[in-house]
Image (cartoon, rainbow, N blue to C red):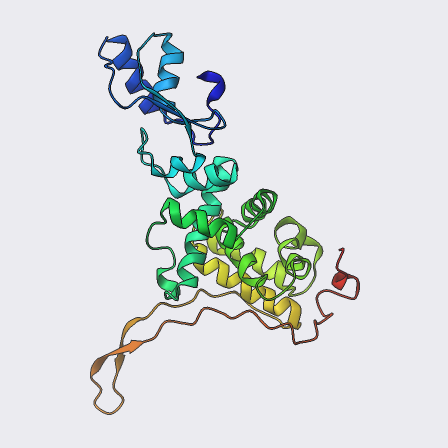
Length: 293
């Protein structure tokens, strides 16, 4: 069993300790719920029980099911509630921490694709079946995720937001153009002078988030898109403001002098500027537009 535990779901120590206590107290009972292995020999159910048996050296009698489809993992009720990140790790074989970020980005992208308003893009839960469709629909290489996690830490920005922005931008622009922005934020932005959008984005994130990596994924994906638009169009930007959600404010009626409630609409999520424009050399220079940069 120890050699066959090859899924990427991390052990929850409290569950392992629970089973170890059961084993040591002689309370383990053989039931229909034992262990399951897929046709690659990977343990896809019973990971916590197996770890407890290995660590205690106990001998038990248990049911073992062999040759299940690897996709059966999605339908198995394991020792803990599996998250979207767990399923993404199983589907992609990414490290769990990277899969968690990717899964969060997939939820935002799925809600956006469903036409849900941006204020609700982080709502809801994705099923294993949905994730099996979303991963090939919105593919992101693990090295890209690692790169954007690193950039997020340098800017104190949401890595999930950066992944979302990258996927939305590359719906319109080729990756080598998008990377002119994403590769230039964070520590690399120090080389840029004036109000270069990459430096402005980095400084805004650091100042607004005050030394803490932000989890405001949707807002920061929008801010990244605004900065990218300015980069390729040659515009100057100031502080990147957050989008406002809809609400109600109290204003004074000029005619009566009375206070009244006034509703206001949410800001629009920014569109990516279209490639029909000629890319400005203002921030990029001639060499910055070469595909192999």
